[in-house]
Length: 333
Image (cartoon, rainbow, N blue to C red; front, side, top):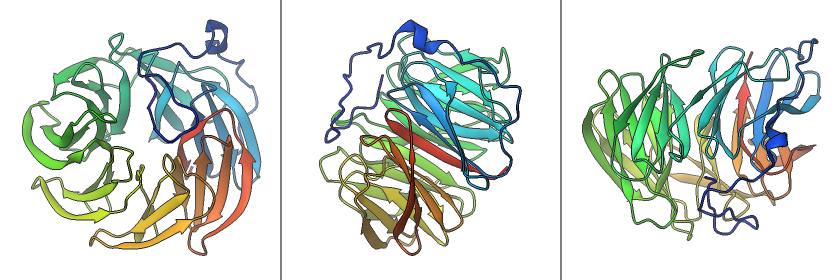
């Protein structure tokens, strides 16, 4: 199931629909040549079911480096040189080796129709929210790894793991559901909850500060960022951004969140509760990744990835992406 974002010119039906033909899911042939070294920026193209790679040091762009399952919805780097891509309609997670392009290393399946939505890596296990089954999955991310399911309140969409705790955000568009459920990683037992606003659709744990950022919005201009202390299950402060703040990244001593499903704004804020600046740059940032002073911005509707200097707030360059670029990460290899 694809994320449904009112305001985007491309709306995906809430009913599970196959977006591509079966032939599009066949993996490309693996390359015998290694990919360029150094830092790599990776994003998935939600409408093309592909992953692109960009290597800044050599200015090399590898398009359609990997073929994903149907409706990719999240991406992360769980181990040096490897990435995991979560597919909602295919209901699986795939692992790819960044040293070469081509087929997947392996994948792990979830229950059919469960709609895996977001994931988080805690150093030992992958945690995946199953939006339509009111469960969260703990995954041993190795070939043939086990999947253990735990029941949580309805519409678990976002997740952040700290190593000892797992926080699950609830809500899906205009469901009226919100809040965070806190689980113990060792048992999967629910131990607490946090009353965040309706539709807490993104969670991000920053180990450098020990805090979780919870992004809430109904996509009606009511965006709020809650700074959460996961140990005490308390909200330390909240930042009213308006719009629909997306997954944040750390930029210097501050943080940035794109409003790509509502506007061309990027919100800059701190954990003290201040909205420091709003940068309207003409690019609807549906995904952000940061490396040093460089910000990489996916623009879903324009099929582009933009390279910007976040400090100077200037767009430097652009890359042609596949159809519907969304989630993006920058990996320092």
